[in-house]
Image (cartoon, rainbow, N blue to C red; front, side, top):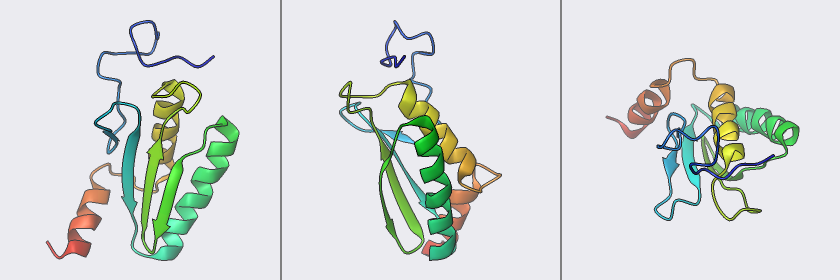
Length: 115
């Protein structure tokens, strides 16, 4: 069963429990995140891992890849907004991202930007 993210959802905590690094869209209907890797091969390897998880969960991201960057967006088209499927898939993608430290992707992004 898929639950909408509202007070009738047993998982709902009031803030949508947005996983680390994900941002809720202004219209509240999707979440997105940018994953940055040292090179294309590592970015593509992440996409492969996430694709396998997406098939397992039956919930597929809207995403794009340019060199070392993977931009991902999650929404549940059947309900027209966010559901538990999006939050579960977002956490799964975080787990598969290969970053053991949740701050590491910002550190890598800052290093690549020359900060």
